[in-house]
Image 1 (cartoon, rainbow, N blue to C red):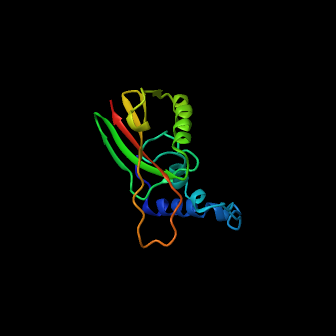
Image 2 (cartoon, rainbow, N blue to C red):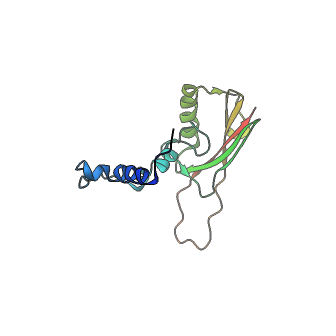
Image 3 (cartoon, rainbow, N blue to C red):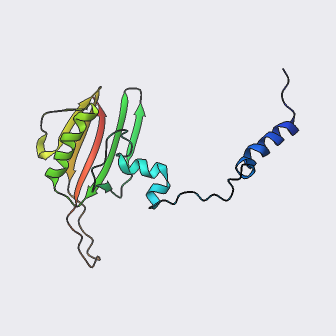
Length: 157
């Protein structure tokens, strides 16, 4: 069997690239998106799930905090940490995850100190820990509403 010539490969590539124009689709507008998040599928996925944790959903009202998530994937298991924040009650966050996580195969572990929560699944432990938000900067003119800050930690068990 012989390889196609360079001319044949170039012709095929040109036809593939020109396909939409040849099919009459060159002037068809694409649907507009309502937001910048929806325009980028990777961002849309990260808005629905805690970054680095696969199928751990983000509670509506929580958003990624300023610090970047930390993810290590090793043979013994993955280690991930992500921080989310939002202006909501700590008990509402606990209630959301207590109802949602069992539906995703996580079982509730005994209550942890400090009002945090733990869930177990397939050799992994997911911890939700409430941390104090950083002290406001004195240079800011208007104080922000109090935010609930949640640290999601995924560790091998």
